Image (cartoon, rainbow, N blue to C red; front, side, top):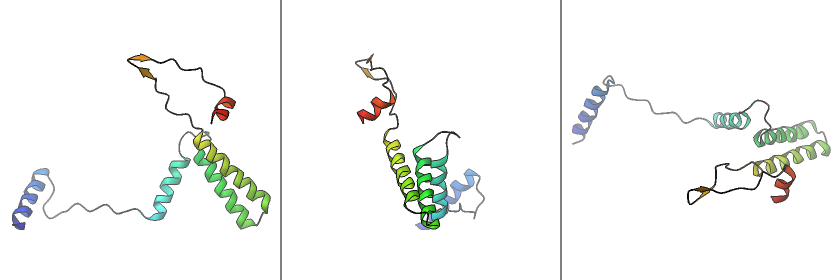
Length: 123
């Protein structure tokens, strides 16, 4: 019975244009360091001069590591901690979905966009 299936698979591969005896190699799983590089690239990527939460978070980690390696003292560690808190706050203060709100087929009027202070106070 298994020979029957094997023969059918070979026929299908021949019809698809794949040479006989050549199997498709399975994809290799990326290593841990490759995954780190991919995720760091996504966090840093985007517009060149945009300040994103990912970039601020990476800067905070770099400052904290430098404070540990250089034994720069508590001042540099505090700067790193403050950057980390700012990045965390930036993550939650991102503007949400700006899709038009509709009810029963009609657009719902929204309040005018408030200033940045009102948005902080509202969070």
